[in-house]
Length: 316
Ligand SMILES: Nc1ncnc2c1ncn2[C@@H]1O[C@H](COP(=O)(O)OP(=O)(O)O)[C@@H](O)[C@H]1O
Ligand SMILES: [Mg+2]
Image (cartoon, rainbow, N blue to C red; front, side):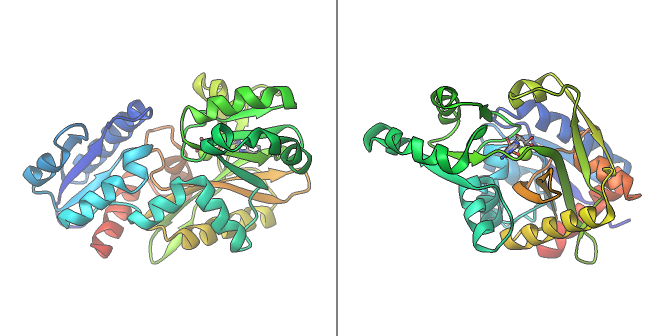
């Protein structure tokens, strides 16, 4: 075990994912206690900077999901205060959290990601963007996936089965961000590969999210009411597992991630893999995918925390 540390656990926040973050934070604090570290919980509401300075922590553990904690905002504050912190630096956070940017980078790097068009709300409001939809529909086909560029937890993600469902789906996605994505639908299996650092970045066993019901188009309600079970390691041919892990490592490197991250992919019916997105602060609750994947690799929750802390201090 490393020397005892004072760890500021940043949790809560003002985002829609506040509840999950509080659960991640509680798990992390319990684990840190077992490891002999001192955990100082900081709810990142008002006066975050003052609280951070007062905590006199050796390192900050970011257990915030969604906007501030994942998009680089908090990371920039920690850089400014010269406090080492867990996870990815601001640049990687910005790239990963903005799906439009991440997908452009992946496409340019030859990493398979579903075909897409990004749409700014000003294009719809001021430039007559609706006129381009028939052309986009021909290229992407139906069902089409509509999602906010910066979202999370499937919030605002809708499947439009036909043209008449597009406007409603778009309005929904625009309620989360000024930029949305229209994306080709991949029919297949939902996979996630987490990456953590040991000697270097290592891909963990693949997790598959299996829906409990067949015909679903609304991911919001599906995730909301827990209509999914997780299988880890996913039952896949060895070659597919290896390819998914290799893609996850490539994306991790491409975006400039550090410490840990989770890459979400789809496996289509022709056994092709498509990268959807990367989460730079994946959930750390007892049922979250990263802890499950680590467990399947023989890495318990406390060892996972030690590794994440060690990587934070290596950079800082
Ligand atoms: N192009 C797509 N084809 C099929 N399913 C998709 C597609 N995009 C998203 N999904 C489904 O919606 C879920 C959430 O989408 P994702 O892009 O990961 O956004 P979020 O940041 O909200 O998790 C995915 O895990 C997947 O099940
Ligand atoms: Mg996702």
